[in-house]
Every structure is written in C-alpha cells, then in structure tokens.
Length: 166
Length: 166
Length: 166
Image (cartoon, rainbow over all chains, first blue to last red; front, side, top):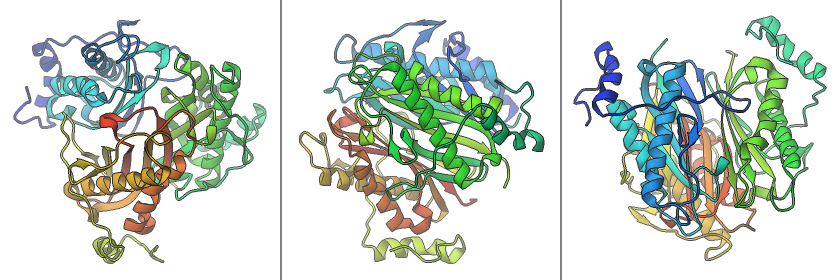
C-alpha cells in the first residue's frame, strides 16, 4: 500500500486525496471542540492536534473499556476512527496538502487493569495513517492504557505533524 | 475578556502584565523542581513546560481524587492553579513577554474509574490561559484521567509554548 | 559527574562516547518496533522518540506494578533502562553526536492506586540522561502513574530531543 517513492513534491502532495479514494477512506466530519480549546494549533512547520475520540460525524461511536464491555477488535476500529478524525481536523484547518509527515502519535486505551495489549489497539491508528498518507504517515508512537477516558470514549489519539510551508 | 485584536506586536506584548492585573490574576511563586529536571526547557522558539501540580507558593493546595474525596469544582480550581504555575514557570525562565502562543496543553485528572468529565476539569486551565493571555492563550489540548497523580495531586498540567525570538 | 563546561562544540560532541565509557554505561541494543511505527522520527532539529519499555537487548527485564509485585528500587532501575533504550534508539538512527539537548521526558509508572512516588521512579531516567549527556541531558519532565503498561512493562519513557544540524 506504500508508495514506492512518496517524496514531497507537488505530484506526491496531490496524491493524498487520490490515495484516500483508492483506499476507500472517507474522513468523518471534523467536530469543533465543545470546550475552550482549538482542534489544531500550528507553530511554523509544526501542527499539534488535540486528543480525538472515536466520533463518527459528531456521534461517539465507541464507548466503554477493553477487557470489560468491549473487545480488542472494537478497540482497533475505534483507534482507526480516532486517527481519521485527527486527519479530518488537519484537513479542515491547514489542509491535507500541507501534511509533510506525521511525527508523533500518542494513543490511550480505556481498559481494565489486566489488559496489556495496548499496542495492538493503537496499531489501528498507525495503519490508518500509513494507508492514508503512505510513507509520510509513519510516526514515532507511545501507547498507554488508562482506566477511563473522557465521555467514556474507548480510545483517544493525539498527534504532532510536520507541515510544508504555507 | 478577550482582546479584540491580540496581535503579536510590542504593544500587545506589553499588555500581558496589564491583562493579568485587570483580570485580578496573581501568579504563584514558581517552585524549582525537587528532582533532576528543569521546569522549562527551550529549543529555538519552542518552550516545554514540566508537569505542574496545584501548588500555591510551594504548598500543594489540592490533593485526592474526583469522584471520591474531591468535587468537580475543586478539580476545576486545581486545574486553574496548575495553569497559573505553568505561566509562573515561563515567567521566571523566559519571561512572559516572550510567550507568543500556547501550543498544546495536556491535563491529567486524578479520578475514580467511573468519572468521565475530565474535559470539564481541564477547562479550568484552558480558561485561565485565555484570561491571562487572550487569543495567544488558545491551544490544542488533551484531557485524560489517571488513577493517582504524583504527591497525590488532584490535577497535573503540562504544556508546550511558542516563543518570540529572544 | 557533570562536565563543568558541556558546550556544544566538536570537542564536547566527541565526548559523548567517552562519557558513557567513563560512567561505565553500556547502551542496550536498540530494538526495532514490532508494530507499524518507527522508533525515532525527526523533523528539522527535533527528534521524537517512541515510548521505550525496559528491554535489555530485546528481552523485557521489568514487568509488573509498583505497590504490588515490584519495589520502588526495581522501578527506578527500570526507568534507567528505559532511558538507556531511548538513547540507544537515537544512537542507531540520528547518532549520539547529533543530540544537542534532551528537551522533554515523559515517564509512566505502572502502579497501584495508592502509590504517589512516581517522580522518585522517573528520577532514574533523568539521572541516567544527565550521567550520559551532562548538561545536555537536562530536560523538562512529566511523571505519571498508570494502572497497567503495554506488555506488562513496569515503566515506559518517551522523549523529545533537540538535534545539531545534520
């Protein structure tokens, strides 16, 4: 699924939407935060994306905790949806074309104390970004478990991206 | 409370202390870390601020967990105090004048497993920064719950800020 | 153990390996991630290092939780090993010589709900970095507790470093 030569030229840049279409990826509608913060804050060629929960066009699609009322597969799907929301937030602020590289992704999994497969869950987000962005989607990452997430979300994803100059 | 035109020129920069005074905000004394790290580390026009717990001039003012021995309102006040400490740390290192923008805030709430209103708690920190810095205080954000914080603090806040050139 | 004048010139840069040797520090073998992410992602003069668990040449050396089946001393040793792995990852990607400064370290301690000494644990990582890198190893930091870490690791460390130009 990786482009053999992702590059950073105009041709490759134009390819982001083509790649999404070919991979059958539809981005959810970017939801504005309900609180006093912004979804994306930029600084030069860095973009900080706020924690994204698995909303599908505004509705929280995955609640609960792995190891209790949710399966590993559901959590993987939730992580993928969180990553899609992160991309949607970047699209609606700086635009997908400006994403030069995903730099760092942190993923949090609501889970019981005996669950230890957090990396398998967050893998859903990492694979989504690679499918959507190719080589530019590969990132450093930290996966963690927490005992409960905001709004009872199953997974939460935040990331830092490197941008092409405006 | 927001400036209609925050800008980044000298006039706006001079306004930080005026704004604090007008908003009745007194910053706590910045406490030096008790361990082998620094409160603020800078790199070019980025400043990384260490996790701040709700200390009021050196004394931990809010302990415990929401959902157990602390209320939501107490946690909001604790988040506000954490943000005030973050600003105090920036003031005592790079100086308030150099803060061009708060980029990213991560907030952690010590809470029981059934608590899901972490964003309402961290909102205390976000609103404080906007009151203190105006448009420059608006940031990307992640709010999380943890089952216990260092020193039994009720809330912990860390942030990344963008700086004007020295 | 600190160099009186760490500097950033070629002489000081050459000193990193000497310092490690003098301090009796052997870096573990950098393990490639088992998932779809990279150990280190760079962007200009910034390097983001993925969460590191206490592996000793590929084998997880410290499992469990403080306050339950592990002691504070074991957790401190685990934090030190995590930091050694972070340095090994930087060595095998950008090279130790390019590390200009450790900027931010986040440390997570698997621990029971009544444990509050997370900073004493993460101190193992901070001291290791200062022993290895001198003044350049001093960083901003956040220490947190979580109820369980990936693969049942006792501690996890992630960091951001500033790099000399390539």
